[in-house]
Length: 191
Image (tube, rainbow, N blue to C red; front, side):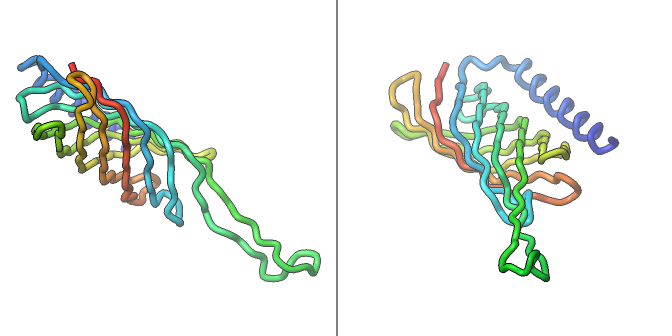
């Protein structure tokens, strides 16, 4: 319980800091992104993949600097491994059972994004902090989360671009660290 309160307090403090920065200088431009996301995670003993979505809202403070809010949801089934009895049941061979864990993971993070425009391309880098929540079958846990990564937008026309993004996401669910790779792609609408 203490850990959940700490993560929630840190998230509120981070959001308040970002809101204070944004309030001090109201962004005149920015973008909204929504796309497909794939996360390769070590939440289970065997690495597995979760599919889902990612949405971001970025407000520009300067032409090269923005503050981004990042929301993600990933879903899937993670392989817990195979258990085989020492003595086969019923005298027959095999009898091994594979166990899978139905998993839902959500992350809410905030942080700075630095990028520049080079022709039709806009490469960027970002660092985000926030919280993650996972539900795995009947168990759930909330954790501090960080992301470090970047990507590239390709301008289709003035108000629309296509994004490819990759992030290293670190969480600590169930008192164990998870080092995840998240890759996403989708549409960016600029304002």
